[in-house]
Length: 103
Image (cartoon, rainbow, N blue to C red; front, side):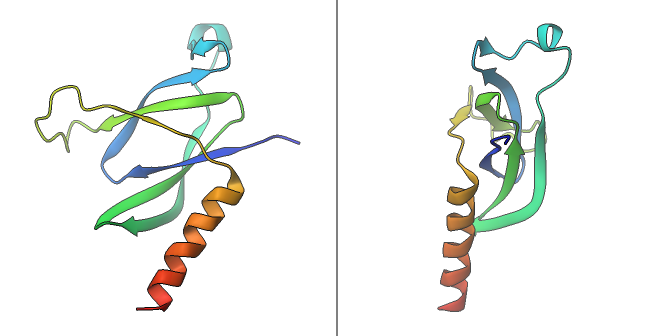
């Protein structure tokens, strides 16, 4: 069974560097880019749209940053994202749905 991981990323941000178990992802050694896929699921949190991304099991951590079209002028604005399990992603999606229903 392959373990898939997930993370949420703000609309307008993009993935930068990627780390695997042995350190920074090396496309030459792996002979490919890491598998990172934006899914068709998003949530709104604090007025911000967050997209759900799926990553392969070998990925340990991802760096995210504003895409060039969205950069706010902040120097060095980069964030390391903690990856979550499928169960955690479902919990987040369900909790947002509950909040909408209770409005």
